[in-house]
Amino acid sequence: MKNIILAACLFLAACNTNKPSADKESAKSCCSKEALTFNNADFYKDGKFDEEAGKDAIIKLMKYYNYPITDKTRSQLWVSDYGAGHFTEVGLAAIMYANDEKDCYMLQDMFLLPNQMLPEHWHEKPASELPAKMEGWLVRNGLSYIVGEGEDNLASFPDIKIPASHEGGVTVKYVVKTLPGEFVPLSRVFSHHWQFAGPEGAIITEVANVHSNESVRHQVKLINDSFLGK
Image 1 (cartoon, rainbow, N blue to C red):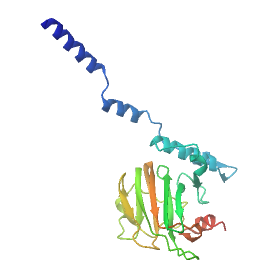
Image 2: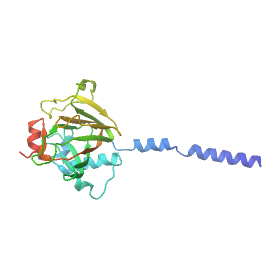
Image 3: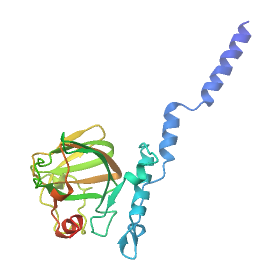
Image 4: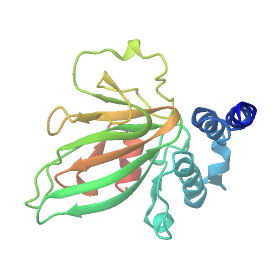
């Protein structure tokens, strides 16, 4: 009987040794992810921004982070290079899930590619009875440096490199390094702000009272004119 018990114990030990641990499986899954690398030239055809190529990149980012993708996701995506001509440096993708002007609530998810900058901007009071936009951001995946008014600490974050395509640099330089699960509110209504994604991009949920494209103003004239269709 002792020999039978001993043999059974040895068999179970061998099985446990050969069975990969959850940590090993997790590491394997992580290592098997396709690297998020992009070539700016791939986003342009005859000098014009290719929105479908931009959407392809965002879908790749979504898959990287297991973001839920439905049969409507691609058509819901808004992507832009803001007319700067360097989508891998300056740009944004977003899905607006709600923007209720009557009851004043808004929710959208924003997507930034690795080391991509959401350009500096602010929100003016709409011409209608709508309030000026007040907002905040919850990082879901990756890393985003959320920048706004406050004491200049930009030099403490050498990973942030303002692209030449964001002409004239930036005017606000208080950086909050924001990780998944962390929420950062806008410091005040009308204040300037921008973001810069980490090396693996970022997926960010934005909440606000309301959004109006006509009320958005960008620090860089070329970007501002492009966004407003001038």
